[in-house]
Amino acid sequence: MPSRPVLLLGFLATTALAEPQTAVPPPTQFQPKVEDPMLAPVPPASQQVERWEEALGLLKERNTDLGSAEANVDRAQGRWRQALSLLLPNARFSAGVAIDALHPDTPVLSSGAPISAGTGTGRQPTTPLGSGTVSLSQSVVDLSAWRGLSSAEASQRSAEASLQDVQRRLTLGLSRSLVAVVAAERAAELNRLGLRQALERAALVQRTLELGAATQLDLTRTRQDVEVARQSLIAGDEQLRRAREALGLSLGITEGVGVSPNFQLQGLVAQTQAGCAPLKSVDERPDLVAAHAQLESSRDSRRQASAGYLPTLGLTSNLLAYTTEPGPGRVSTWNIAAVLAVPIWEGGLRGGLVRERAGVERQAEATLERTRRDAQQEVARSRRGVEVAEALVKATAEARSLAEQTDQLTRRSFEIGRSTSLELVQSAAALRQAELALALREFELVQARLDAFLTEARCDW
Image 1 (cartoon, rainbow, N blue to C red):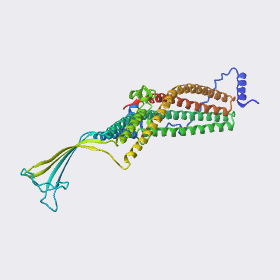
Image 2 (cartoon, rainbow, N blue to C red; image 1 turned 30 degrees about the vertical axis):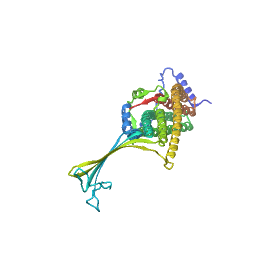
Image 3 (cartoon, helix red, strand yellow; image 1 turned 180 degrees about the horizontal axis):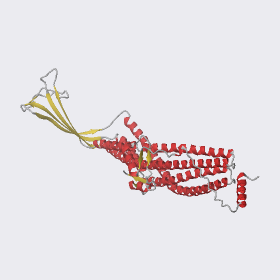
Image 4 (cartoon, rainbow, N blue to C red; image 1 turned 180 degrees about the vertical axis):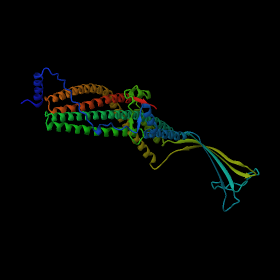
């Protein structure tokens, strides 16, 4: 039995043959008008970034990881200065006023030691007695202190390299957040387009049902497709809000941050290259440099502990002056001494310290090896990722073109009764998925190029 559209077309053809004198205008294609509150675009974020420089400026100003890395550099510089102080001259001045409560007329120093009243110069110590001491010490031979200075210097280099690595990773993270927001914005647009097309198909089937060329099952299938498209739209909008929140969090802002439509995403690679320099080899990556320096610091720290068994030689000088009558006072003593210190027994403290720092050195070696393996794998993956992303974009674009052709042909075939509503719904869903896949693949290509550059780069803000 012929279908209803075929009968309708046959009736029209018979009428046209029976009345050749009457000009029949060409049939106009049905254009459904759909309205839905969810078709309205997502409201823009309260704060948006328009340029890469603006986003990078906010990152430098408000990011906590960057501040922590900079504070770590300051700590390393402070430790280096502390280690250096053990090798430089140390001078100290102390002053005091003392009186013997039991014998007020007897002059005593602030240390409690009495002082002879006879000076041989006609000057008598005052009571209460004011005294001042200047002491100077200088290390001459102290291998442990030199090892400590070397360890602190390596630790400072490690902190500086770690800061550069944090800057590189923050640059990479910021670029990913920006790409994610732009991709989510595009996905939200495509979801709304998919919902509009689903609503139009449902209206077309509703019109076909009114003309008697469709069934209630056809209408139910298209309405089901509308709800599936609506679910995708809701999920996509939530993904967009989360992407904005992630961007705001990376910029140190507690609310979501959007990306202006004027943001030039395609030029993002060139903009990052302006602030970061490519490396000649993987070994120059800041994280590997930091791990190397940390291993050197751990090794020198262990040597410092071992050098604690060795004797040390230093020079000391002390000058003592006190008040007299008539004043103002006189210098009582000034001595210079060479001091040789030989460690004998410390209750096992030195041995425990050597063992502990040897363990820290082994941990640093393991960390360096793990960092090297991770870096080599990351570099290989990022280089391969660009080729894979380009191939995926090409294949996805072809699939999207075929899906669009299939959807158009299926819709026309359904209008003349040669396709079912199931085929119409399936082709529509395939087209929506192809549109989303192509958009995501294009953004993945941009991100792959950014990853390939920043994986082998040094960023120094």
